[in-house]
Structures are given as structure tokens and as C-alpha cells.
Length: 192
Length: 202
Length: 198
Image 1 (tube, rainbow over the protein chains, first blue to last red):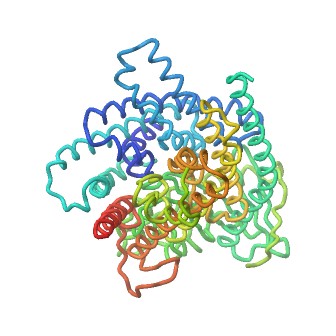
Image 2: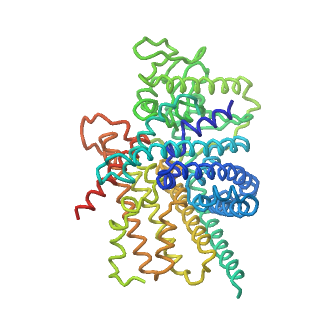
Image 3: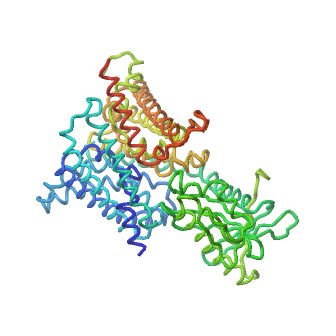
């Protein structure tokens, strides 16, 4: 039950993009076409799940054990960067199809603040291993959900006759605002 | 020097410098952070149990409760931290209760992320004040705005019944825990370090 | 290497290369912490501290760092300064630290900090790098404080906690996440309009 709550909260009510503003850069950058949005989304789900697992183990079994939690930020960012590199190399070697689908998005993920945010929130909320894993998957799915919704809207928006000043980023931000309002309808659905 | 040797050397040197400076910074910041944490707890106890002079921490199992004494050493009541889910996220409270555990002396919301303008009103004093002197037997309850509350009931905030009910539920759960600890008898309660209050009365 | 007058390195960050309004970088903290003017200002100052210190160190060691480990080195330096800033805020300004929450550590992944190291500090002498960092930092502070002031004003009728419009009926939406997106959307549109009339 607890796990279901964490999952639904990460996907809908406390969505990373619309509630915590994590991962806004890729959200603005790759949401103009559906195809790229799906690719990016899948890559993020993959890396988030992995990050949740690895950072949890490192934080609890290395940093806490040796009394070094103040090295948290330095460690996490290095772990995430190396993880993305390893995944990239691994995919290129063993699964060229998957690499073709996700490859170009992987390097972009390192600077996606939602990944570091995931690791930080996991520590802050004192999740255990399984909870962290579910949180990671949920956050990834939530990110993908919002990214694809946005891409769907923006594909239509491309045909709209907008005032020049609003074209591009401004209208995307305003659309995101309306989406955030819509997602507020989910709050109260479950209690975190 | 080969390129890879230089790469490793640079990364190692940067890593060592980073580690050392952070050790130093952590040593500097740690006592302050611990102090702020204690002060925040002490300040909250002051609000829920007015007139408190000395606070003792009582640890039992996982629970920590605070025994509040006045300047003559008489027991004023107990304070405890309680937390649970609200409408949007976690709510954390400090609750004060009289020595007989039948009446609340106050409640203070320490952390909450309820909807601004609606649920966030649980942090306003008009809501918190309702808990002062509230009867807590058999349990705390609430009524919707506009109805007349019983002596053990508070009036929920209009448009934020869930947030108000969450606070009530968290208070009751914490209260039950405290009753269990206190009833189990004081002798084997282990009294830990007394919290010093350097600021005096604020 | 640029031979612009030195003050130009500072000034360009305020408008031409303003990280938020012109470059649209570093959006996460921009949207998340600007519920009030004070939060925006604190976040701006913390970020500027990290940016300037990192630029200082990077511009000093720029000739020693091999290209292959450039990014990793910069990232470690940034994360170190972020931890310093975070611990300092926790120790000296607990209230601000609590208000900014996990967004202080998230300065690590603020794209324009790494960006400035890549395009400027790793290629320019120390003095110019510091000016550049201060300029971009000031642009960021300006953007965050402006955004925070607007949201606080419309959300509660106050700016920096002082009542500005008496009897204002608060627009709750401005304090909510949605308000952040809407305000920034309109602000960027306004900046685009101003830029085009020039």
C-alpha cells in the first residue's frame, strides 16, 4: 500500500516536472516532437531506475557507514555521470537497436536535474531500498507522461497563429502552467 | 607524462582538495546545525507549553517525548513531535499535553506543504489556537465550519477539511503513543541530556 | 579570445546573455524557489557565489586540466562549492536554508554554471572570468528577484514581506507551481517584445 502511494505520488500528484520543477531544460528542449519526447522519456525512466538503486546503495553502505554524508552531492553527481557513461557504452556494445533509440538522449541526461533531484529526495525522505526503487520508476514514468502530453500539445500549437513575442519558450511555459493547474486536480487522490 | 596519467593525477588532486575542504567546512558547520535543530525544538515546546523552564528528553523504543518542567521543577506537561500525511504532503506538529494527558495545552505546525490559501491555513494561529485547552478524551475530533464544536472538537478550516482532519488524526495518533509511553511508568524511562536554552524567554 | 573592454564582460550577463530571459538556462531553481522575493534573492546569491568561485578556480587551473576530464573536473569543483554554500546556509541562515530546501544542492546541475566554465572560464584569464561570472550571476539574481517579487506581490500583496497593496485579494495561483510557469512565460514574452523594438 505504502509503495502504491509513493508510486502514484511520483507519477501524478507530486510530479517531478509540474510540482518540483525538475527536468525543465529537457522538458522545454525536447518536447516539440512526439518521437523525441518518447525517446527521451524512455531513457529517463531507464536511468532513473538505475540511479535510484545505485545511489541508495552508495549512500547507505558507503557514505553513512563511514560518516561522510557531507560528500553526498559530490558523490551523487559523479555517480550519475559515470552511470550514464557506462549505460551508453554498454548499450552501444550489446544492444545497438536500443542504442540507436536512446543513445543521443543519454548524454543530455547528466545535466537533467531530475536525476540528481531523485537521489536527493530519496535520502531526504528516508526511503528504504524498495521504496527508493519504486520512487525512481514512478518519477521516470511521471516525467515521460508529462513530456509526451506536452509534445502532443506542442505539435498542435505549431499551427497556431501566435503573437511573435510568445512563440517558442513563452507559450511552452504558459502551456506548462495550465498543465500544472490541471494536474492539481489529482491532489487529494492519495495522501503522501 | 602520458595523457592518462595526467588525467588521473588532475582528478585525484581535485578530488583530494575537494574532500579536504569539505571535511573542514563540515567541522565548522556541524555544531551550528545541531544547535539550530535543538533551538527549533525548544522554541516549539515553548509555544505549546507556555511557562516552561526546563525540558527533559525521554526516550523509549522509537519514541521521544519531552517532559516540560516549570521553574520550581513541577511537571507542566509533555510535548511530542508527531507527523503524518496531509493533503499534499507530510505534516509535522509539536503538540503539548497536560500531565494528566486529558487536555491539550497547544499545537504548533512545524512543517507542511498544504495548498496555499486553503490547507496552508493550518499554520495560522487562529487554527493552532483552537488546540489550546482542548479536551483530548476520548480523542480529539473536528466539525465542519458553521457547526458548534463539542469541548473536544475543533472547527475545520472552510475548504480545507482534509488538511484539518489530517492534523486531528496526527495529534490523536501521537497522543496514543505518548499515553502508552507515560502509562508504562516513569521509573525505567531513561532521561537523556537536558536541553539547554541559552536564549532565555523570548 | 575577446578584446572587449573589461566592463563589457560584466555587463553582457545582465541583458544580452541573461541566463534566464535570453538563454533559458537554469530553469529549475528559477521556477521552484521564486515564491517570494527574498527566496529568489537568496537563491540568486547562492548561485552567484558558486559560479564565481568555480570560475575563479577553473580559470587558474585551466592550463593544467586535460580536455578529456574537463567536464568531470569542473563538476567536482562545482559540487564542492555547492556543498560549502549549503553547509554555510544551514549553519548561519537556517530559515533560508529550510525555505530553499533541496534546491540548494540542485545548483550542482544548474546548466549555466557548467556552461560558463565551458565557454568562458576555461579559455580566459582569471580577472575576466570573474567579471563574466559576476555578470551572469547578477543577471540571474535580477531575474529571480523580479520573478519572486511579481509572484509575491500578486500572491499576497507584499514584496519582501512588506505590504505594498493594502487590501489585496491574494491570487493563490501565483504561489502554486502553475503561477511560476505562467509568470515566467509572460516575462520571457515581454523580454522578447522589448528586444525586438530595439
